[in-house]
Length: 222
Image (cartoon, rainbow, N blue to C red; front, side, top):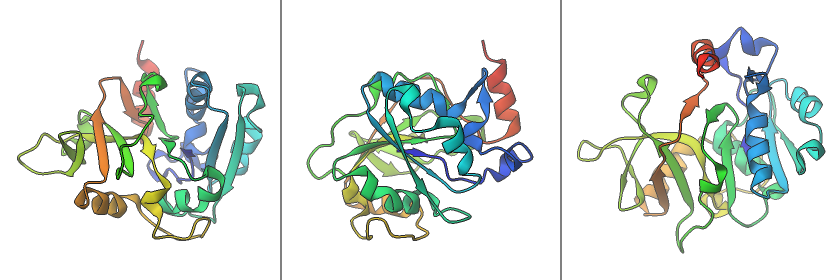
C-alpha cells in the first residue's frame, strides 16, 4: 500500500493544484519511483489511498498496466482519514497477509529487495528507520534487540522512514473498510508496549519531501 491521501499543507502552493506524491523529481512523479521498485520485486497488486485531488492519481497512474502490475484505489472523504484510518479503510483490498506500506511523499535510494518480507510470530509490524535528519533531530523511536522502542535518553533515536511491513492484526480493533479518523502513532505505541513491533535501521539515502525547500534540494543532488 502506498499512502497518498495527505493534503501537503507545508508544500503549498505546489500542492494547491498537485497532490504531493505526484510532484516530480528528476522529471518523474515521486510515487512512480515506488511503483517501479515494487514492480521490480514482483509485486502484482498495489493499493493507493487518496483524498486531496485524488482523481489525479487515477488519471496519471491508471490501472497500473504500464508498470506491469494492478493498481486499486481507496478513496477517502475530503481531509482524509489519517494514516491508520486510511489503512483500515483499505484493508478489504489488502487481504489478510502482511503488506508493505510506503509513504508516497518520500524519496529513497533503498533497493526494495531490502524491505522486510516476514514477521516473526506475535510481531505485527516491522518498521524501517534512518538516522535523524536535521528537520527531525529529536527522532521518533529507539531500537533494542531488533524491537521498536519509544524514544528514551538511554537509547539512540531514529526517524521512521514511512516504510515497513505491516500485518492486518495491528488494526484488529477496527472494522476493516470503515471510515474512521485514526492516527498510526497510538497503535504503534500500544504495539511497542506489547513487544509486537520490530525495527531495523537502513543506511540508504532518504528524504521526507515535506517542504518546497527539501524538494528543491533533492532536485540538486547528483
